Length: 384
Image (cartoon, rainbow, N blue to C red; front, side, top):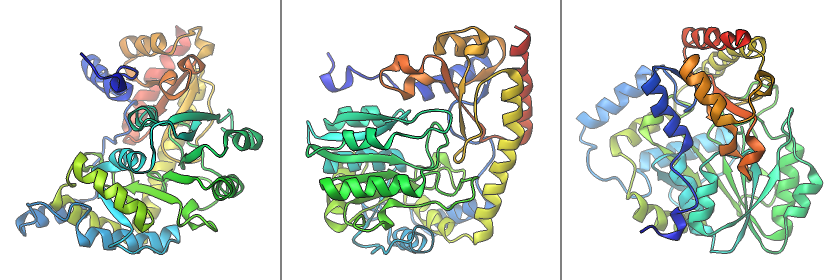
């Protein structure tokens, strides 16, 4: 009864795990949503927009106020020159941005390079767009890739490469020399870079976020994706945006129009206010996540997980083999039912899935008291 395109992937493992966490009353360290709220200023801006009558469709590709705010933010933070009328498309979250971008530039059979472990949506995005995905491994503990592996992955058949920095699920922040190699290869092979930069403001190492679109020769061949979910703790608002050259933007807008028509108008107005928050907000955001990382990581190591502190985002990939388990789903069911903590199986981030059978992903976008409680629960694994 089903079309072939949907036979080869399941529903999101992450969202399924969230339901399981609710069933067991577990602490949900699976899905990347905070248990704290977005800034009060954003809530007030959203309410004001509703009261002021912004309750009908906006322009399909995003209201002018938000596109202008995106262009301003791209200038001061990403070092990009952006025309809000030609280069910005607002979508229903970065998730839709990626799907619309893939459908806009990928024809069935095109080769698309992606790094793995990879965010679980990229696999289905590839299948739905007809892409032939080619994987390049990020190798622990530093999650670096072999430059020669990437060079071998590129060819005259390469249409695009997906780059996610800071990286979900490993927390890797791509270094300048890594991005420079990607840029050089894209220019050499006339390939498009599709960059997922949704965690761009959450970097713990002493180096800035780098947008590959700002590298020489890349502004005309890069789709830069970001949004409000992570930076403003508003995952339910579903506000994302693509920045791309005009021709590609026109293609993304056509796809987006028939996927979702448009993102919620009043939330777009509030999203414009969010992007104009003072720089002190971003400093506070980062320090909050740095503290959460400092709270959570010692618990993991004391419990017996093999893991390293992430350089960015708010996820940790953990090797659980010291506990005597050799299957990620079995181990996660064990800690869900017996410890009361939910995570994501590593197999959902790797191809083939067997490569992730001894890994799980945990996240720390939680209140400090929640992380302390989750950590105490995980310490029970030492005695089992």
